[in-house]
Structure formats: C-alpha cells, structure tokens
Amino acid sequence: MAQKPSIPKGTRDFSPNEMARRNYIFDTIKSVFRLYGYQQIETPAMENLSTLMGKYGEEGDKLLFKILNSGDFMKSVGEEELAERNLVKLTNKLCEKGLRYDLTVPFARFVVQYRGQLQMPFKRYQIQPVWRADRPQKGRYREFYQCDADVVGSDSLWNEIELLSMIDMVFSRLKVRVAIKINNRKILTGIAEIIGEADKIVDITVAIDKIDKIGIDNVNEELRSKGLSEEAIERLRPLLEMNGSNEEKLTTLSTLLAESETGMKGVEELRTVVEGFDSLGHNCVADIDVSLARGLNYYTGTIIEVKALDVQIGSITGGGRYDNLTGVFGMPGLSGVGISFGADRIYDVLNQLNLYPEDVAESVKVLFVNFGEKEAAAAAKTVKILREEGVAAELYPDVAKMKKQMGFADSESIPYVAIIGETELQEGKVNLKDMATGKQETLTPEELVEKLKNA
Image 1: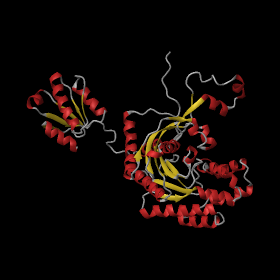
Image 2: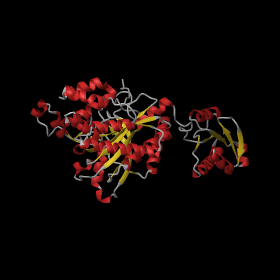
Image 3: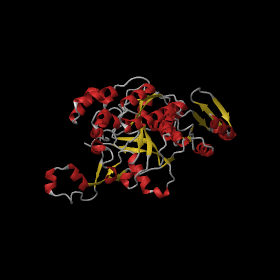
Image 4: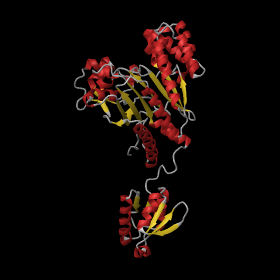
C-alpha cells in the first residue's frame, strides 16, 4: 500500500484562499514598511553554521536545523567519535550549513558583507520563512514567516519610537487590538547588579523571559537551579511584579536602580522612547514591563513585544536594540534596532477574529461562459482587453452546461459572469450577470471595461 502523503510536524500547506489571506497580511505590513522608508532585501534560506551558531544563546543553538554535508558526510567521522556521542563535535564535522533561525543575524552578515555598498543609516525590510527545531504547538511552528524591519548605523532613539509607530499602524490597519510591552536590557543588567548577581545576567534574562508561560514560582525555581541565592530571588520578585502607570514604574525604577549607572541609563532611554511614542499618539496599549527580557543574547537596549488583546496566543511581534551584532562578523560598533512581525501568528489571530475584508479572496472579477468555438474566440478577445485594463478576467476553458459553469463561478466567489451567446455575438455585446444580486445587463465591450474597473 502506498504511503499516505504528509508534511513534517510544525509545517503547513496553504490553499489559494488561505494564501489570499496571508498576502493581505504581507501586503499590509509591506505598505507600512515602505511608508517609513525601508527597502527590501532577501537572504538565502541556509547560512553557514559559523554564521548562526553562538548568536542565540545555548537554547537557541539547540533549535537550529542543521543540514548534513552533501556526499559521504560520514567520511570525516571515526568510530571512536561516534561512540563518544559528543553532539557539538559531531555537528561541526557533519554539518557546515543550517537553516536560518531568524532574519536578524543573516541581516547582520549582509551588512558586513556589503558594507561598502550601503548608505548609513540603512533601513531594510525582509519577509521570508525561518526554521526552528521547536516542539510544535498552537501558535508555535517549525517553519514560519517573519516580517522584519531594521535600521543600522544610527544610535538615535527616534528609531525605536518610529518602529513602535510602525507596529501601531500595522495593527490599526489589520484592526487587531494589541498591547505593546516595552523594556530596556540595561534595566535588566542594573537589576542583576543591585541584587548582587551581575555575572548571572544571561541566566536571569532567559528565566524571566518565560514568566508569562510558566509563572513566577517556576521562574524562581529555575533561578535557584542556576545558583541564585534566596536573597537575590526575593529582591528580584517585587521588580517583576511592579504595577502602576508607566510614569509610576519609571519613578520606581529610578529609585530602585539609583546605585546602578547602567540601570539608570536604561531608565532614561526607556523614558525617552515611551514619552516620544506617546507624543505622536497611538491606538494600541503601550505598557512598560520589567519582566520582559526577550531571551536572545544580542539585545542591548530597548526591547519590544506585542500581544493580541482578544486572542490567547504568544507574542505576535517582537524586537529591540542591538549595539554590536555586526561585531562578530568583523564590523564592531555598528548599532542597530529592529522589529519582527510573526506573520503566522497574526494569520491565526485574524482567522479567529474574522477580521479579513470581504473581498480578500477575490482573484478573478469576471468569468466568461464558454458556449462553443466562435463564442469562446470572441470572449477570449474581450478577456484580453479586460486584462490589459487591469481587470482580472477568465474564460471557462471547456464547453460545458451553463449550470456547471455558473457553479464554478459561485464556488470560486467570482462576482460577475459574462455571457457571449449567439445574440451577443451578432450585436457585438456582452451580457453581464451580477452573481450577488442576479441582475443582468447588456453592455458593449467598452461599457463592460468601465463597469468592471469601477466595480
């Protein structure tokens, strides 16, 4: 028996109707990116593992999909090495390439590789799939699209403010109510300093980044396992449970972090970004969240995460400031900041809330019925005229019963059906039927073009 076709867990097929919905999301995001002066680039699906490894922290490295070397990939591995089962060592020998984990690290590689051709500051956007060897679950996929916008070569906090405004505009256009959570990595560094655990900043940020998923008690348990003292954990708790308005949180942070120079710099940066965003006006909720850590190690300043307010799902957008990501590729000191829209989760949100425009799946505006050779030839000429005028039109390819052809138009949600029968052929006209109302009218080809262009 033939094996039933299937796809890997954590991946999805998309039908034409689903692709129409996804393209609505992509087009909405692209249109906002372009309004803000961002330019599109693309990078390969696979990168050298040397480009990817060590950029996402230990947990991120585990989630990289590695690609076995082509040919006899076992030739450089001895029996003793296989028996030793040192996965890191084996990976280095068996794999030279991996699927990209995100779009930010490949972008950093791109900037360094083409630095002589780029005008700084450089604003780019990129919409492509990424892959993570994660455990599939609702809202979490192994293959998914990211829609990134980054600006490098500028330290100005106006970049962060602009990115927040972009997020607000995208979700306003998609009609999704969101809350933007904002923090600063320097604040987290300051917190680690004042609780006496500055050397464990990575362990602290990785743990507290899971607070929404596992709760503060489990976060504290993870911190204990990393060697944090009970005193440090108790001093950390009130900071993670901070309440009040953004202004009240900033005041509290200024008091608590007064002895940390790095922490105070983070507070001032956060104040500038939040007040600047508020001054421009926005539809979303903007909330300072000190527990927000964004587990990726390359963030150094502002960090951003977006949650949908009306759907239970993980973050649908995230990002932040990274001061030296390009340094690992030989170009130190180049600051950047960026955001990434999770298109697949946004797709799930819009599906659950049914927020797509009514005509989002409409691909063809008019279907011409096929009555026979002469009628089809005349219809084909009219179809060509319509297409040249920017109207999507289609001729049913086979001579078939009228009921079957009308049923096809109805199943494909085609709003109009055009009929050129014997009478219309003689008069040089077209009978147009509105599928929604049932109304029919006879038009000249010129009148038909005008009507459908404005429909």
